[in-house]
Length: 254
Image (cartoon, rainbow, N blue to C red):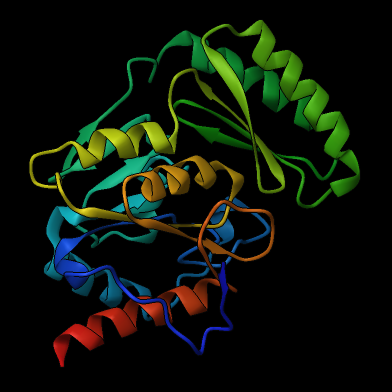
């Protein structure tokens, strides 16, 4: 694995950006993880960088995030490229929102109510409401991790439409059968994308299956930050990610 400090670079596959499908996670990859999901500080260089990439790559640039579409749009209101959101359960392509079948149904509301009631009596835990599930964050109360894990495991077992996914300092409960790797496989089969070499950049355990898929398809993954990974490359932080993407663009512009 290439472990980088942010002053080196990772080479693009043959053909450069013109032959790549670039898949970017958001939290922890393009922006630093914040104490709360709404507390993200957007780097000033990110929107113009994403616009340059979109102009160069079209649909071969896609943001693949655990956030829902509306939440990401609050941070990137002018980004017009495709978004695979809620770990693949919903998409926004060409400005059109494609929701999941469970969105707006009572099963999701029941999930919200149970997680919210659990968090209400446990200081430091945070409930993140998502259109298709819930995030149970213990970043501010790491001593409650096991308590959160047991609750989330039991809850996912009770709610048969949902399953549990460990994430960075959190537990995600979301509909069965979705995942970033499932969404990526479908995306790579689109006529406009087919044949492109996938490059997936992510920081979380939920990104690992998608990075593994990218490598199976002849591309590679880039792990951001510490932790075990299947990725062939590593960068230390989102600042280094943005610097790498800028170098890729500037290298092709020469």
